[in-house]
Length: 328
Image 1: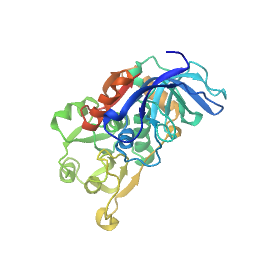
Image 2: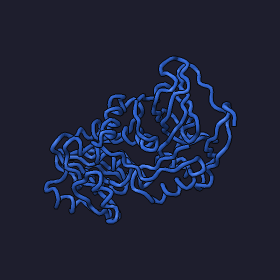
Image 3: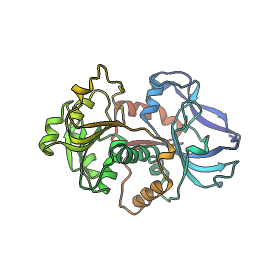
Image 4: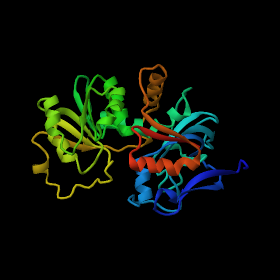
């Protein structure tokens, strides 16, 4: 294959995992304000599952999916980054309004790129960008957690849930996290979760047994079906941050605030992009991982673009706890 062509995973229209097909495409040519990245690894996200299932809005087809990618700069016509520089790229329309990270190369806006330096394996590095951005932003902007507080992570074995537990533990919080299967408790304990709660859909009473009065903060990653119960597990002046939609349901039908929200409990939400992951935050986390002071919760690493179909099957089935990563 020549350097003018590349392999990429294309989705022509919503469908089953098999609708994701590997094709040969031209390598994109960046213009001023863009960066061409040689993709060394990319993480899978629920956003891409929503797109494949036809649940996303504002997506045009055919499309190379992938809202994030990790790799090295090939060229940046505006001079913002040097060739060979390690970078992550995320959001800004990646994989939705323009082709994303499920490819050997990705052409992205400068605003979507964050630089770093690390000798960690690409399989680890590929797991980090969107997961870290979402977890960091949820804990800081969404919840404003403080050392000594209690945090409930609803949807704890998801990649963002595990990352949030890692970050919260490093900030000195007591962390409670949920899983629908007691067999996944070990995965939560491995990242420092203090109390594992098996989620049967109604956990507020159990959480209040562990933390009388309720938790200070709760990160809602399951979505609409559980947020009312999560609110009931939260203390007066505590905060619930609605960040994830593992249930593929994010609209609250018949939402009546005075009935749903306990007195004094606060409900907020978080979503972010590359600008919400400062380079120094990314670098500090990667350095901590390299030093053995933090852990990247990787569920499974796949090799080759042809593995994307199986990776999507696994993501939809919840086969692994943690982030799924593909090395093209």
